[in-house]
Every structure is written in structure tokens, then in C-alpha cells.
Image 1 (tube, chains in turn blue, green):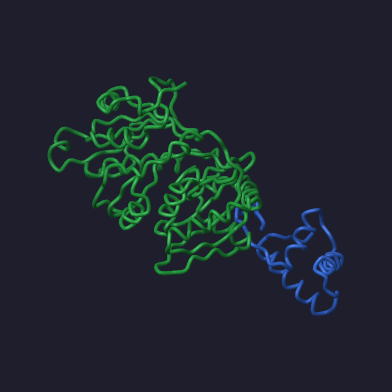
Image 2 (cartoon, rainbow over the protein chains, first blue to last red; image 1 turned 30 degrees about the vertical axis):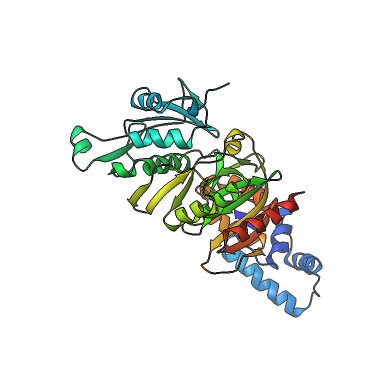
Length: 70
Length: 306
């Protein structure tokens, strides 16, 4: 669960989005390092299919203004 | 020690209501209630007998009055207005619905104001030191189940409002009569013939409505908060089996939010407190049609509090 301060919405995150958001709440991170962190947290191999899925997840979070790029 | 309403005779209570008003304490709130309608006096005398009252107060949370707007309205198709701080937030209702109008108005006072709590539309009871919070939409059988549990020894905190402390997510009691309507009235009368009911209000927009007296112990403990224990979403399903199934906390959170009066209004604080409430509660869906089985199920659940 996430409280989105900008909109006041309560969001239910997918299980794969949770480590991304949790890590970014601590501070900004390069995409590669972020995916490495998520793979470790979720106990997945950091292979092409995982990266492709996380790209989609990250893109969704950016569309909802939950994550921003610098 | 404050005097209780049962110490007033009905005539004296009616006289107070017609003049300076009754200063009624229920949970953390005080109401000043004024009305010349006899059924209001009768209902308060019957249902709030164990509640303390004050002779006079400099401050009350809610100043309410139910009376006819003019002499004509007292005689011709008599109707009542509900005055809140001299405003009339509702359309007038027939005098035959006076007691239900009072209770609805008292609920409205809490629902619309009092944002120092996270408020859910929910019944709240207590057993073994833990609170059972049952958020539900109207028509889900929440009040019937709540009445049955109270009549079988659970402490009633509220039939209508879960008041959640913004500090520690404990449940704050505001123990008032349980509202029953239509078939639920006979269901509870058959379930417990000794239950005490107030004035019957027929042909309301909810059908026939009657309020049931809370037990003395629940009223006596009306200032004692309770830690959250269980968050249960009840649903009466005719002829169904009794079924209590675990529910994941994330969706329980969202559903409880749907049943809140002020979750969005409280913003990040609401999220924080709801997180504490859900985090400290075991979450379930509950469907039932048999009240005895329902009570047995909750009694077993209460044993997990230990």
C-alpha cells in the first residue's frame, strides 16, 4: 500500500513494484542498480525477461507520477 | 459521580427536554437535546437509562432540537425539524418517526464533524480485550449481527461508528442503542425475548425502524478504549452456511477505506492510522444466515486474543 502525497490517492502496488518503490523512498538510484536490488529482494535472476518486466513496472509507476527520473 | 438518566422519572425528563434540555454524555461526546415530543422522552428514558447526564454545561459538542417549525405543523400532518446549532440540515419528517430522527441526527453529528478520529461506518464490539471492527454497507446484516453478539456477552462499543484514535489506532467507544430495521427486528426479538426496544417508527425511508437498548456493562465501560483485534467484513446471505475466511490485509485496507467517513479528508494521517488499524487486526470476510452459528464463530475467534 502506498499513500501518494501529490494526489492524496491510496495505491495498491503490485508485488514487483513494491521493492522498487521501497528502495527509491530511501533515495535516487540508477536503473541498473535498482533492478539488481529488486531481483535480489524478489529472488529472481537478473535476466532479460526480468529486466523487461521491471521496465514495464517502472514505466507504469512513472505514468502514475509515483516515480520520477532525474 | 454523575447522575444517570434512569434516576429521572419520565415526567421530569420530558420537562427537561421541553425547557433547558437534557445534557447527555455518550462516549467522548456530550449532546444537549431539546424536544417537546413525548416519544423522544420515552425513547431516551428507556434506551439511555444507564448514561450519565449533566444538569448544566458551559460547552457541549452538539446542540440539537427536534420540534415542529410552527403551530400549524404541530396540528396538521404533524412534522418535525431537526435543528443543529439552529440550522436545519434535513427535510422535516413525520412526528411518528421522531425517535428514529433523533438517533439518525445524533449519528449525523458524529459522521459529519469530529475529524479528530478516523471514522469508519462499522459496528465495534469487544471480547477478551480486543476489538472486533465490522465495516459494512447498509443492508449487510451488520447491526443484526452486532445486536446478537452484544446479547451474548460481547461488549458493545458502537453499532454505527468505529472511532479510531489518530494517536495509537485504539477504538474509542460511543455506546448507543443498536438500530434495527424490518425483518431484523423480529429476528432479534426471537433471538433474545428479553431485549429492550424503544419506540417503533414505521414507514420511514428505511422501512420500520426500532432501536435496541445497549447492555449496562457496555455503557458503564463507555470511556475505556480497546486495542484492535479483528477486522471483519460481514454479509448476511439468506440460507448460506456460516463462513469465516481470511482476507489479505491490502484489500481489507481498501475496503475499510471505502467505508470511512473521513479517510480521504485526513490525508497522510488517515493512511498512517488505517495502516496501524489493519496491521494490528486479523482480517476476514464473514457470511452468515444463522445467528447462533455466527455467535459461536465469533466466540471461537475471540479465543485467539489470548
